Amino acid sequence: MRSSPAAVRGTSTAGADRRHGVMLRLVGAGVMLTVMADTTATTLAVGVLRYTPAGAGMPLGDLVWLTSAAFIPIAALLATAGRWADLFGRRRVLAVGLVVFVLGGIAAVTVEPWSYVLAARAVQGAGAAAMIPASLGLLLGELPESERRGAIALWSSASGLGCLLMQAGGGWLAASVGWRALFIPDVVIGVALLIACAWLPSGRRAGAKGVPDVLGAWLLAAGIAIIVLAISKAMAWGTDVLWLALAALALLGGALAQARHHRLPAIDLALWRRPRFVWGWLATWGFGALSYGLLTVQPLYLLHLGYPMLEVAMWLTPTSVAVVVSSFLAGRLIKRIGPYGLIYAGSLLCGGACVLVLTQSGPTVWGLIASVVVGVGVGALAPGTSVATTLA
Image (tube, rainbow, N blue to C red; front, side, top):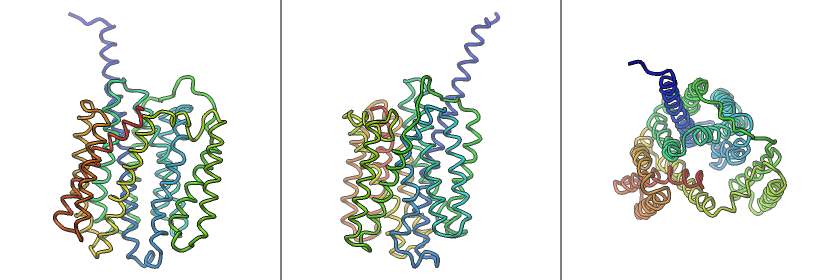
């Protein structure tokens, strides 16, 4: 018995939708994997640089700008990049972001002056700022509502895998080739993701009009940059940093003023009137602060104690494995207990483990166990905070 043409077309359409769904998930997860691998690479690079002739004479606050230079454009441009993605198509903005990210990575590997390296990191941050909302927008805009929660959990959980892969291989790479080589894997993955964009839907939102608040985004970026500068130079500059704080407040005030009058603001004030979004944002902020300690402070502390980079990477790997396994399980549990259940569980695990860490005088077996428990908590927090904030 022959199938009708309509049935054949229906089967073909369903198959194409499934393939699109798989590709959307893979590219979205690849974006988060790449961004977190890049963040981990930077923290490892800071640790290595402290013990090289190039970085030995630099204050730690100056070296940490290797990380801050990328974080500032990410924090400032996320909202604006999301608006551009809605206006011009999420696939297009994702591809542009990947091109910018890859070019910044190539520059970070090849340029010599420290100021140029920081500029290259800022370029990578701008690229990541476009990649993150565009990839998330594709998942939210192209997948059925019933599949979005699981897709967002996978999207967020992939960051743990990026951290694991970089911590496992980055120590060897830095010790064998040098700190600049830590940025090479991100460039390679970025090129692969750029090629994969050809199989994604355009993701253009119907009826999207207007021009995003570019001035507000620049004011926000400048304000955040000055705050970071004031914090990093507080010990060296003393009370003079108060002038920087005042300048930062003026710039952030300008960004807020722009947001009140612009149709597509860099700071969406309407979101801040939603209690669920505020609580989700606070949980995300706490998760970010915890991740900073896990990714930055812990490796620097171990290097300060005299451990070579390879041993530091081996010490951190169990924690990253715990993050990956926990994130995978959390992605399945989120449909049963919801994002807030994961946030509560992850916070309790992290808090209890941190108390145990405080009782240890240095790297011990109990300290390692506590770090693994923190990894389990972080793995629960990653998808929980992402889903809570995104679907608020």
